Length: 255
Image (cartoon, rainbow, N blue to C red; front, side, top):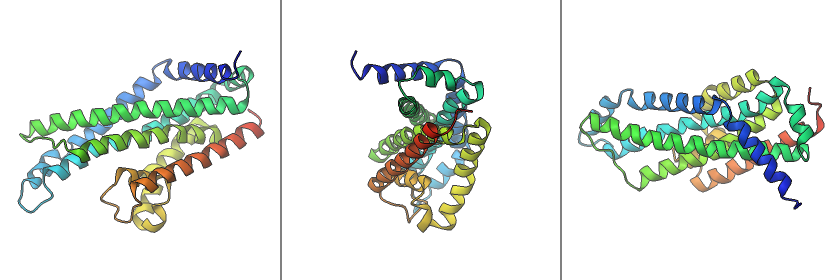
């Protein structure tokens, strides 16, 4: 048996757990419903303003509305955290450790599953945002601008969700409590980090959210890093979170 068989089997087992039940499809539906609601809210007013001479125009509105699919990153994080904390909540983590080649191998498989789940959330969020935006624009007798920037926004959504999934999984390993992990991720992402980004942009741009905004090239944050540095910063934060999770998971008791 090759040395790679164990990790492949572990990843297959984790992917099977992740797609079992209704958690993943339910989260995808809720995610898309919230994104669509945010896209369609006030769209008519935005399009009316875009038609006024001297304004940013339809291209800017198109990029902004499609970019709201970025919210999928939060659900990718929550998916990663729930995937891990479900096992602590049910007590199945002990069985998973027993059958895994090692705790590190189990953690790596969970993080990889989180990344795959993140890509799924990214594709659904970007694709759904693009479709809803197109339909919304048509309903207001306007045409969605499908330029290079629009496609770049879609690609950026997938990329940030790719990083968000394993980030959430790492937080799950660190906190273990499902309720605590969900609350921490939601409060930090939607409130605390947002406040830091707006009040102290010179500091906030180096946080994970600041790195995500850099990848998205968010025009509302003039002090953001370049997209390339944003990717490198996401890699650094991801590596730090993975290392912290590995140290916690391999050194602490399971209960």
